[in-house]
Image (cartoon, rainbow, N blue to C red; front, side):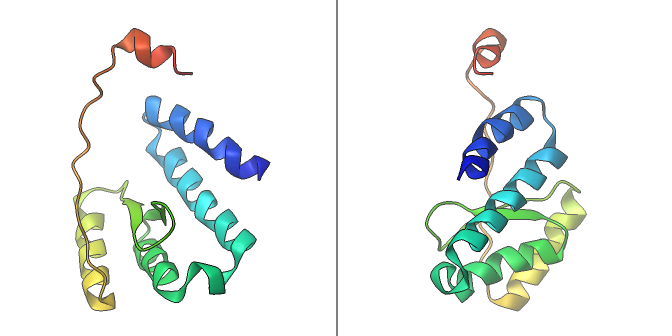
Length: 114
């Protein structure tokens, strides 16, 4: 549980530093720990499938909450996003792209969050 708890501040730091490779590793670690703690029966085959489809194209993926959806990071750009769309379509998984809005916080406010 301590390792899971540490992922949040580490992820926050990776976001602020725009270290998307590290963020992806942390996302994957979060999912791996959750799967290890709760097991496949609790996570459910459909939820596991969504993560595995994303990972099959080299993307990072984790649950958004209790299941039913995952968040995916495609650090390799549009070509990887296209591969993800194709893999998801083949697997019967729906992709809903999101647009990340810029922060409304000032640089000083962001720095205070470390």
